[in-house]
Image (cartoon, helix red, strand yellow):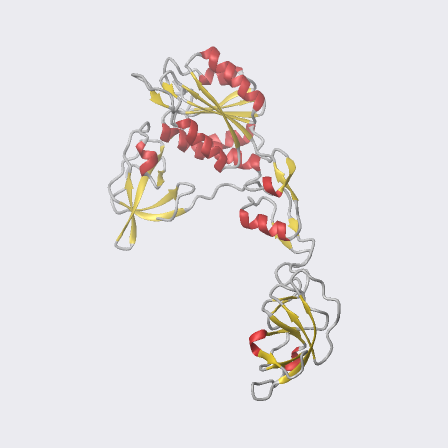
Length: 415
């Protein structure tokens, strides 16, 4: 039997008491290796972007006042004294009555404050003469130095997960390397006589392992670096050896299976042998997820999750994800929530926080949540559900039509 079931909140408090929920360390990496990593420092721009006044149209760099009152019937004559191509440095300053040919993106010569579009001009009688057919104002068709980013401006905050757009900004600033938090290494282990790795022949009485890949992907999703150590049969010596190897190589250990009350349920015994303080949570008042066992071996958490796929996933979201995110320097997960009306009456488990997967449907302009009533071991619930609802311990039922908050599974699009 379980020694004493605790609430989800109490389980989380015990984790905080025995596990250091802080970033593991910092390393410096090049931009090519920085995608998906978490920034370990505030990044301040070392320069103005753009670093010079640049033309935003093809035409002529001019002093705007030299074009005032220009029209097709009364054009203003300007002397072309040179040109600046993209990537070139202007060599002369502009004087009154002069113009310099520029292309989109090229630097403006000193003294110019506007760009006269080429279509607003025509050739004059002299080879180096153009006629301005319309007037421009100061700053027109010009991106001023520092318009996009100013030197000293905070660009990306510490704790931000770097995406392709952010990496582009860093490259534009000339930053080649960044400091990021270390990824927590997570060892994943499946237990069970009945489990077979996908790709291998399936014999009578065997099933393919589901949890290894859902846990592997979930670790990636929450900032960890997963390592799957394979399937171990329900043999205490074999599992103990695998767990000790996992603790040597990883910061966090996650197992699935062999946690409920039964002859093969040896995880709680092993968790007490691997280091102090041993088991800190021996069952949670949750459905699914009740047989979750959490141990700590000399500072390293060991999450022994149920073998049933939905139970394992719900337990991961509740207990493993917060630890991984803290170790990776990520902020707490904020699941997207939508409001929906229940399609049918729900009877939760008595005295337990009940998580019910739901499928969402839009009906007459509102969302309807259809409970996916499957056993916790049914893998179809993973595929059919868009999210889940939580029913607190003291609630005895929810009526059809009642409004509920639906927590969307990470990565799901808007329904």
